[in-house]
Figure 1 (cartoon, one colour):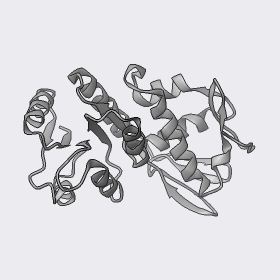
Figure 2 (figure 1 turned 90 degrees about the horizontal axis):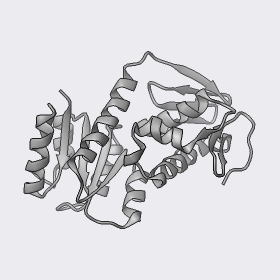
Figure 3 (figure 1 turned 30 degrees about the horizontal axis):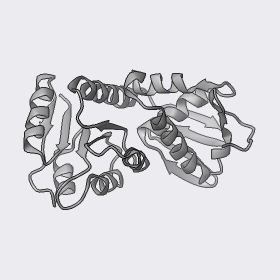
Figure 4 (figure 1 turned 45 degrees about the vertical axis):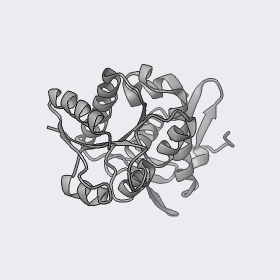
Length: 231
């Protein structure tokens, strides 16, 4: 049974979501003290976190940053705010998805199931190392390393990189990436993929590798071993 930590201060919504998730055999936990979110997160050790943006004490962005500094646990944001910068900010902080309130429960469960399936099924695969552009890519540890150093990627980032590397020198369409990454493109915005790609390349730039992920305007992306300028 997967453990879900639902960081939501609206008690009515919390109990409604908890009841529905419990029907799907998830073990759902809430926060008792919103000034001690990290302590409770550490104690619960959830498999996935669902977090609202507007919370007492500190907002969801703060707690996402704190959680991501110590864990790669998948994080889904909930928000009643409709400003696009909220979604962009959540993705930049390392969240896996963003759900706008009010939401249909089927959308929440679909995104939650897709995230758990992607993260934990993927983690059960044998250790797999890949050499790319002189760097070692460890798909299990989510680490890319070369003589310049090493970087740790989120689950989304390593999955995107894996998809591109496994089809090296071939264009992978945005539609294929979205469908492979989120299982059902109906629940994913095109901007979500753009944010994830940009964040991945920014991290790869630390190892001088970002330039090996090319943007093919109107087509998709391609991993190469011959660098060109990218947008």
